[in-house]
Image (cartoon, rainbow, N blue to C red; front, top):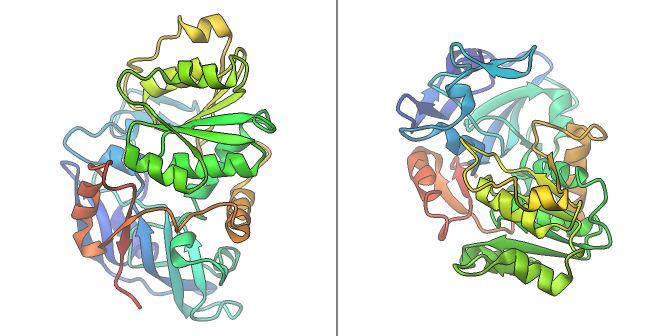
Length: 358
């Protein structure tokens, strides 16, 4: 079983105002004790953290869909099996954060150092000094940029790694103009795609894609995206498609868009049964390959450190816009409002929690 919030508090990993998801799938801000700082560690005060628009939402609401709440994960067999659920409420989450060191028991890490990381939605956390040094936020990047270096950027760099270079020198297509899709599209372009088409049903999100120099394609009612793209680029014109929505119907459309024997990199978090996915159609007749490019499956040629370094370097060169992508900021005390805002995708792309510091 994962550690409980009280165990995380005792270990110094959470402290002060902390977001937790409780029974019934509701979200609240709870205050936890701040543990003494261990030798060789630093205490970080969080400035900003961002809600996961995918995984975190699967724990929320009256009918949560995350498999860890339904079944037991056997780490030896790497299977979900019948038995007690692996996770129970209350759950602390969070994987995108930036903050500054306010206390140090490591002489190599000064107070005031800017840090990025994937710690919980919590006001205070601690980490080994070596980790803080490895996760220093460069002065040239903003606090908002730093939110995406630890996890969101690596999710997308990892997905592009699974394309194995097949997108280079050709157009690529990304389904989904959410944060994951928009960053994946930029990484694919920086990695050699000649143009990147981003497919979404929401004009507001496609406008953001266009502002980033990407090619927007609206999946409006009556529009056959595969016919549109293949008529424009040719039946063999698209070697790689990235599916970043987590919708099985979109995965089906990605299969239709890619060329014969092309590659679909599935990086969305798919929930429940695969409604709308018809494997007897283009998947069967065109010999399409599908690979899982999700972050739980890190590409064997990469590590967390190299994924983060690639994200940071692309941001520093300006090839990757991170903090400049639209986001709604709410006080952490009003975290329930932030989660509710994500239910309005036409208005809100992503939500950042502000801890009211500085």
